[in-house]
Image 1: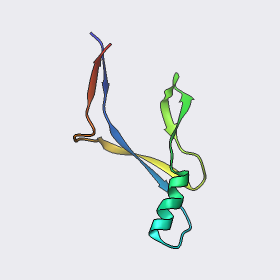
Image 2: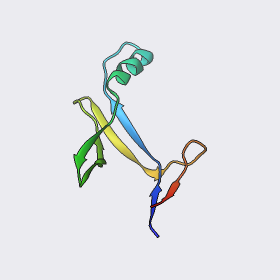
Image 3: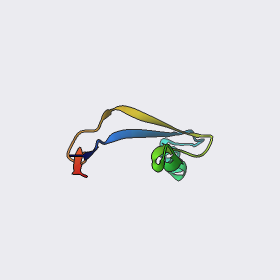
Image 4: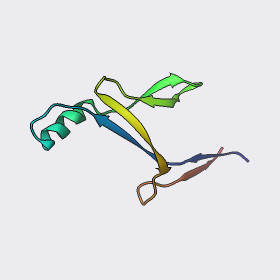
Length: 76
């Protein structure tokens, strides 16, 4: 039997902004903080990235665990 196992991992998006206060920095960052799917490796669900010279993306090393983050197993 074949199964698809989905394991949640964290992805961190960092945005460099000029602001007067931490709250203003957060508000400005949310305008540019998004991830998008890119085509490659045989599909559009294989790569993620960010746009903009002031935005970077980094993947976490360990899976997320908790009530909101569950490993899902689906029979194919």
